[in-house]
Amino acid sequence: MSCAVCGAARARSKLRTGGVEILECASCGLAFWRSPSGHRPETVYDAAYFAGTSADHGYDDYGNLERSLRRTFARRLSRMPIPAAGSRLLDVGAAYGFALVEARRAGWVAVGLEISADAARRARRLNPGRLVIANAAAVPCAGDSFDAVTLWDVLEHLPEPHAALAEIARILRPGGRLVLTTGDVGSLAARLSGSRWHLYTIPEHLFFYTRKSLRMLLEAHGFRVESLRAEGSTYTLGYLMERLRKTLLRRSSPTRTRWPGSELRVPVNLFDIVTARAVLGERG
Ligand SMILES: [Zn+2]
Image (tube, rainbow, N blue to C red; front, side, top):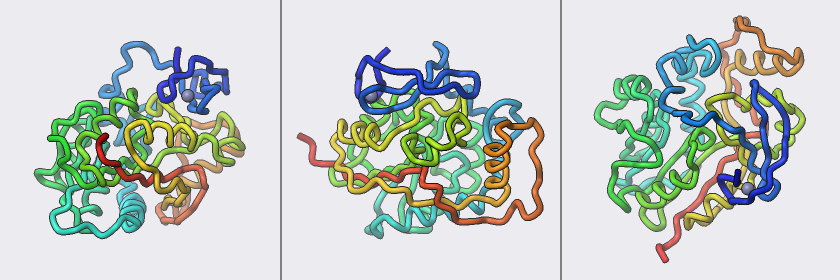
């Protein structure tokens, strides 16, 4: 079994979590698990995944996170250059469309790509006419048709990273920008947390990138990486308390505790989510 990013054949066992063995590429450090053959991401992202009614995976309730997510997306977008009039942005993995709303407020002509029909239905309420239901590895858009592409905490969900990046490079114009966030498995927080790292969420997260593997993936598709930085996110206090409890008690309970003040939003930098900002080079 070869590494999905660098192609190296040698992998070592890293740890066990969520009932699976996490392997680590000996060359680029990409961590991954052997998803069962026939694993179809479309079936993971059903309505229960976002609504918090699934027994074994997904969000607590994605809709409840709207305010903290929108604040995070607005901050991430504010670090991009101010778009010229008519500049087009594609948000891959748009979920409920919260980032699309913020991208439009920031001046982009923004379109969302979403694999889940359930999520796209929600996203359309906030962004009428701006959602495309499709897989990131087959985007139904013309080449060179976007000035920017964003993937907010999406890359780790994609089963074919090279196929997705090839599509993104195709639809972006040369000089266009790619901004993405993903967990940094090589970060201190990830290493200290071991098998309890909060981003080891199985089965939705398929890959856990190191900065090295992320850079290799982007450069393989003609991107020049401008920066790889832990820029911080806004969490609800409830999320942070739940995470702390899981880490300290070393177990997760099936019932989620409602902490007082759990809806409070707190900007925190755990330094374990990396933001990559890259520019597509001229086609050679
Ligand atoms: Zn590798």
